[in-house]
Length: 260
Image 1 (cartoon, rainbow, N blue to C red):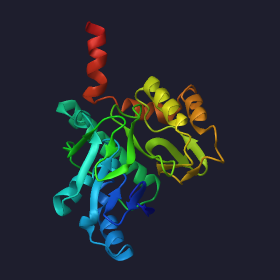
Image 2 (image 1 turned 180 degrees about the vertical axis):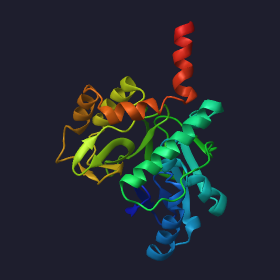
Image 3 (image 1 turned 90 degrees about the vertical axis):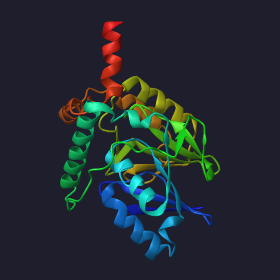
Image 4 (image 1 turned 60 degrees about the vertical axis):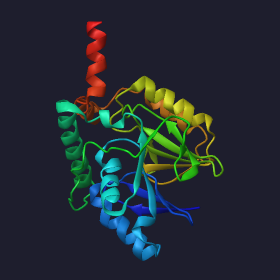
């Protein structure tokens, strides 16, 4: 297995290369389709249908938007955590989806990236609904780790042989600093997720945003992330949170608690 990094629209894309096929480690943005096609055909000298599986770590458009396009065009299968399509369901889910697409474009503008298409399907319809601890279909050397907090349905994938963790948005690396994802919707669940990930004792951690992390240089990283959760949110974090509470997975449980 060899892991390749590609510069995506607003994040880094990773493809794990095997003789029997390619694993897209996160579902990417619709704007990334051309990048993925070029990399497969020109750099790897392999047909795009060799991407046998695309993982969707959570429903934000830069992690889910390209996977349905690859399935429609090339037959790529999609694996995601069970119930992931609840995130953008219903009228308020529609609102949240549009807000998240808008926020993705704001990130692109801040990075001075040419604005491209990010509006994606809000219902992914995974071929494989994953549970915590499951092995990935077609690539059983990778295990699913359920990591809610950023959303209700985040998952990471872990290669125990290599001690390599792809953590999605659980950690955001910017210029050597490690930050919480924007937003952290479920603080207590995020803390539990960091604790679980810390127990894995990974050698390297691959974030969707930032550089690959050598844990020998940051042995207490997940403990540090737990501590970050206790710091007061800054103005940006509060603002993003206000724009991120429309998913029915957020407001419906809150209403039930108030009523019952």
